[in-house]
Image (tube, rainbow, N blue to C red):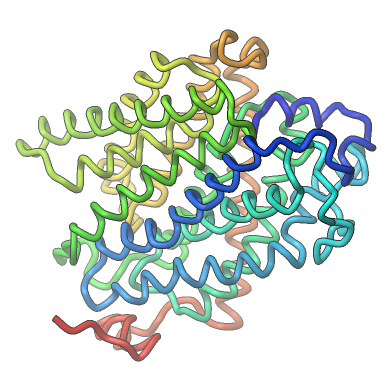
Length: 427
């Protein structure tokens, strides 16, 4: 979504923030956001499912893919019931509503064929809900990369449900729904803090609480199918055009520059990652190149609608290098098992991109760039990090004493495909 609209909403009269009649429905804008909604959903199914599924061992491929499917199922239902209302339900922009939405839109109460939300009066509110739902879906699905190959499926379901309502919804409201971070001028065009830092920090907490996979780091755990991972990364790249370009909420020049910046940063992310990998390991790898593409995509997400393509070149390149070290040196130094580098890529890339948004923000692209400062970005990130880390830990404790967290040693050795789902691959 355009942070211009968010910033305006943060200071607008309460009436603007409530459901309202569609003021200026535009078929062109609506068509673009319908396409963008499909593109962002594509990122999770099948994009992330293939991307993560290809990187685990054969005995855990189906279970890893099942987590992406389950995230889509659980979050979609919860989004309609309460997630949307907690994120965007508003009674004004003061008091408690600066920190959380409301139950005004519980079960989409008050939403009709003729309503829009104040932030996007040119779009039907049902479309706003659908597009935002796809962001809510992929965020907890990303966390799964940190605990791949060792979490109970029942624990994943409970964790995803609680995390969506207690972590994602409040942070989404703070930044995009008229909450206090948007009001203080924190810039996040398409989810650097809301999606990537939020999920990355949660993933790190999960990895630390669950502990390493059996045999890590002693045993070699090669990806089962890098072809799956490459296809998944490609689908993520294509879907990201809707993720960032759709966040302009209009089919206009801002959406166009966001799309271009997304492609540019993805490619320079691959350049940054591959240069360091080639120097350190003496060979470039396919996994390294596609990891660099994703790193560049993560880094440009908060900045896509605030920087020009020169800024995108720099952000992608720096993001690729930073994420390489986040996924290798950082993990090795602190000896935690972030299985598929949820923190190393999404956490590190999101942090770097959010800070660099202020550094490269360009007023000729977005007028809000004039108020961008590194200090504001850092303060916003600290709030998101603190909330995500603490509440994620508490949710894990709830899971530990209800469903349990980890599969037992015998189940982990046999693999989650068979022990959690009673399914195996053949061939």
